[in-house]
Image (cartoon, rainbow, N blue to C red):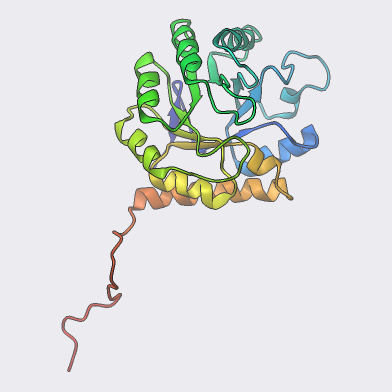
Length: 256
């Protein structure tokens, strides 16, 4: 059975998207990405010079199987985010962009108003926009109506490792959305990734949970397996929750 994930007109086998920050070196970054099986890799345009000659991050990635997803991390205004996305496209990375407009330096929560403003501009300019946003169904619906290719609600604050704090909002977003829903930020371990996928999310994006682990390579493999297991469980359809026990073996027809 084919169960591919499509975004921006391209299909992917892996539903795990990973970042490239916080690793000790480029070699570890490459090993972790390989272990994760991720085909989409996000790169912070403002923190990594993707056009720099010599020892460049992109030179350490398998570009034949990797789609680069430039992000606007570190931007605090719509204008900054728009300019950063344009720089990435001019550098030849393409039209795909993860839109981040941060509203507060301490919590790193997104500025919803500025995100919507930037999304409208970038969509009109032909970008395939994947916005990082709060787990608010109304905002996610507005971003979809703006023309974004996906919505990326946070599970918890960036780098917190708290897992999905409000699964009920995520369920509402999933129920109303006609575009992919990608959980972004807050995942701490493989079970968090599995929960996101069991809810029905199309993919999970993470960085710190892998790069900050004691063994990033092993954690990358665990995350890959967690995403795969969660997706299979969602497709299989879990049993209903019941207050009382239900016998595993039928009692009808037992010989007295």
